[in-house]
Amino acid sequence: MDEQEVIMGGSPTLAVMNSTFGDGTAEVIIASKLSRLNQYTNVKMKITPAQADAMATSIVADPDLRGIKGDVLALFFERLKTGKYGELYNIVDAVSITAKLRQFHRECEAKRIAWADHMEREAEEIKRKQWAETALKADEIEALRRRLQQEGKI
Image (tube, rainbow, N blue to C red):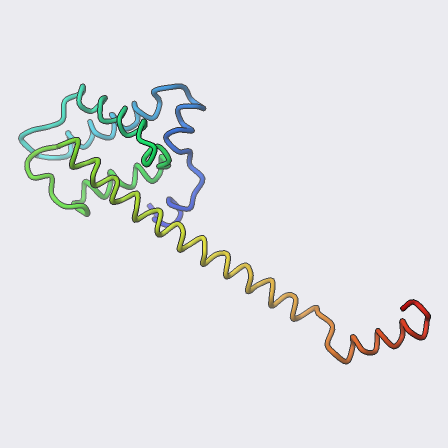
């Protein structure tokens, strides 16, 4: 997954998933990701389906987390599996996973803001270059002013 494409992309947020595809859609996706995490890890204590459902409901209800996009959530779970956010210490635990998700979401938001600012600066620079190429020079402005004066238009 291309991190910038995922973070800047237009996949729906958890809240939008539920409003568009029906209540509970985002929760099912999160619970599914947790189930796959259970299968992937070799920890002794795995999260139960009931705990996964409760955790998914808590994440979607959380005002700070419900704005996470689906692709970003998928990237989080991929990185969680690779140990990017530390070990699971022999337990798949809802609190530690949610804390790691919050950390990841903050990092993504900081990157999104930085990339958006960079893209805005690049767009402004392109506009400035285009303006510089097409704008009248001082001598051209003066000639135009004189011509308009002669024609009685100013």
